[in-house]
Length: 287
Image (cartoon, rainbow, N blue to C red; front, top):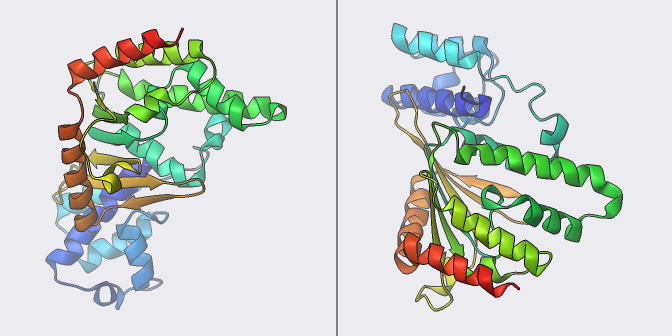
């Protein structure tokens, strides 16, 4: 079952396609509609606002949508509710990261470049715990357990029957940056080597000696591709995160720029077989 985020995004994408096909600006599209502004429509098209079936119906009438498009859009609108989805252990996800969690679940392809630590989808439980206990006061033990449960729940995407193709490029520094004890690092690197054998997981290591542009290797990023049943084609996002916030880029220029960076990183990195051999050698160094 797709997430409500997927429903909002693909519905917004289709509504934008209908507007574009009729050569209407945002202002022109909403001019005859009650309780609609250009800003409201813009947020709806980008999947950034709550969806009401009555609003969607108004737009479908405005665009004289074909019956098939109308049925699909109104049915999709029913699946856009998010009430209660971020309770329990899921409440530990930062608000800016919740869309990324849903994109992981809905994507057909995920490409992630990570600089200084092993990404959450690939972390062993001991590595998670070492990171958490180094950064969270002991008084917040319940939070630590919820955070670990949340990461483990995300990792289901690696092994489910319809798993996306997930490609990782890990800087060598992510493999050498100590978290916890040598035992934790040895286990984590062995865990990576085992995950690299999964059909849906592709891991490459970018060694220190790789010849790359300094600006292109300094910051982590994740790219998502999500198939859409509509006529407007797949959705693509680049996710960038810092300490306090996250950004989602979906404009053509950003997607193209990061796709080019990704191509250069995968070209400079060790191939999957060499990468797995390096993981095993590094694991043996932690004694």
